[in-house]
Structures are given as C-alpha cells and as structure tokens.
Image 1 (spheres, one colour):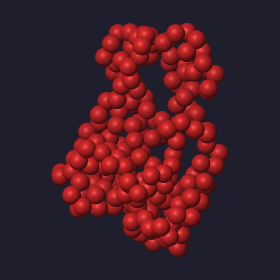
Image 2 (cartoon, rainbow, N blue to C red):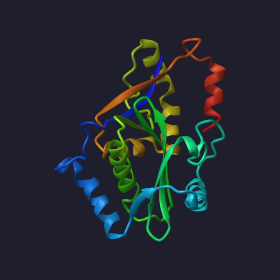
Image 3 (tube, one colour):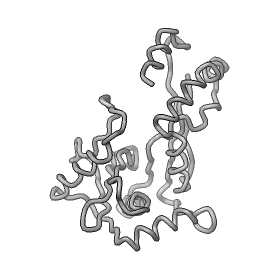
Image 4 (cartoon, rainbow, N blue to C red):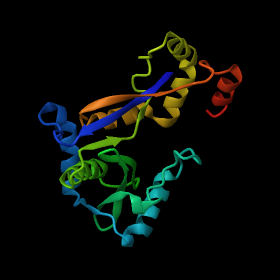
Length: 215
C-alpha cells in the first residue's frame, strides 16, 4: 500500500476561516475579490454556456486527461451542487458532489484572467452555504504527493526513494506543491492520508517504464 497524498477535510460544524496571521493571505485574496466586484451565487441553467467557456479556457494548454479524473463540472449536474463566482461574467465555478454527510468540492476552475481571489471567495462562500444547508462535512481534492515520504511500509519507502526522479518530474509538470500551498490557506480541520494498494506489492519494471514515458 502506497501513500499517494492527503485530502483536506472540513468539519462544517466547527470550521471557520482562519483568523490572525494564519489567515492573512486568505483575507488579502478575499479583499481583492470584493474590490473587483466578485459575487457568489448558485449555478442556474442560464450559466451553462458561460461555465463551458470558463472550463475550456481553464483547460487550454493543460495536459489532456481522458480518464474518470478529468475535470467535468457539468457532468451529472443534476446530482451536484454548483456555485459560480461572477462579475459581469462567470469568473469561476465549483462543482460539489455528494459524499457521506457532506460534499466533495471536486471541480474548481476559473478564467485565466479572473480577478485575484475569485476562487478563494468561491470556496469560502460554498463551504458556508453547504454548512447552512445542513451539511456536516466537506472535502476538497487530494493534494498529490503531500506527505508522500510518510509511508507505512518499508517497501513503499524504498519505492519512494527509487522513484524520486519521476516524482519530481510529475511535480514540475503538474504543480502539486502549488496545489498543497493553495489548499493549506483554507486551514482545513484535518488532512486525511490517501493510499493505493498494489498487486503485486511492488510494480514491475515494465510498469515503471510505462509511467515514465507519460512524463
């Protein structure tokens, strides 16, 4: 079993945005969004075309993903709760999928030139509205590679050492550290480790070579 990252968890019964020095950068972002006139509201069918344009702009230039991990906020929208940050246009959107006693904020996208703080304002407002509607828990996406050194099994630790060059290459391409920094600013209630199980326990050399070809 290999630890692949950690997922931020929010206990909506107790969580509040950070205050004091820990919340300084978040407050700065929220103030910038407010001064730019960014407002938050629930998604409506009239927003569909604008959200599709926002998604297309966000995906432009990013590595293509065709698996179930692809970003698709409008897929099965009838089962989700979506919120948009807007000025005179849709600046950002977040899609929340149902989870046990709560919601997963799984697709968060914005226009490349959206006002500073748009996504921060969107996340904070979404967490508050979910809590007000009776949700008790919320999660954001897994931060890949966060805590990756903290493996439970010695074989996984050996694999980490052996795969360090590939890990660094993935980080340079996808910006996992930047994602961790972004998620940290919300001061989640806790971070939940996430693992994958391998069979055989260690991947074959051919598997590792196939992965490196994706870089």
